[in-house]
Image 1 (spheres, rainbow, N blue to C red):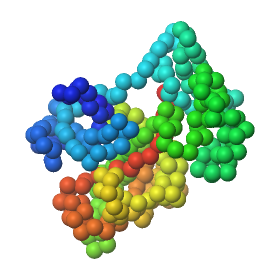
Image 2: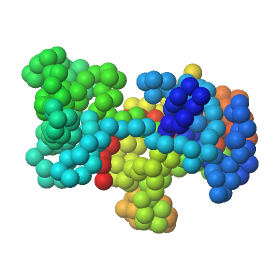
Image 3: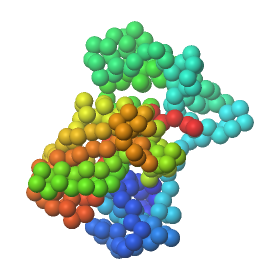
Image 4: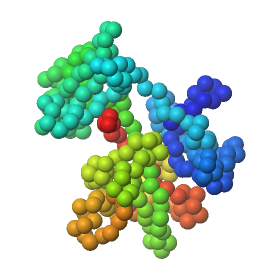
Length: 288
């Protein structure tokens, strides 16, 4: 999210929404209500990384970051923002780019091929075969394929940082476990929009939960500093899984339990100061 400030414009990540009373732990008093909710926002740097500094703003003063748009075949499209192609397409991804005075749609990627960017040997082989070091023309499929196979975080033009949040609903004091929804995909069968006005489908969040448990799990306070805990229980819950297990739920999404190690952090969880999970990652956003 972004908003106007005395210095021009500022950006941040919504950490909590407040519909009654003051937004906690911010330098300037901001009060939220049912009619005018307020947000507690963590500021981010130019690379989108959290800074550990917080402010409060009314939700109606916030806006999404500006994205370059142009007209393509009579409709507005976002430029330089890859999206997944429909099932059955000959290519995996598409992206709209400016080619001189016109807008061009570039498609790229084998739909049957996995992007193994984290495998050094596979990455090196792919980039060598496609001469990725010289791929500079963004109007070509080669450019975007090479971007997808980069090893570092400069791939942000292709993938977007996302933060998913969910409320802590249950605490087990003796074991210092905090249970809750890491993410809610649907409520009563309807897709649930997150704080950014976006959504993740149940099958997609189930895959993300698996990848998270295999490769991450470490917890930090507000995404910074030393390890203060880790996710020890994880349960993706789709309608199909719930039915198979005999679980009745009006929601689909991802349930987790966080084991907290630090004394002060656990006190903050118990007091409600830390009242939500926030999990960061990267995702390829799809226009719908």
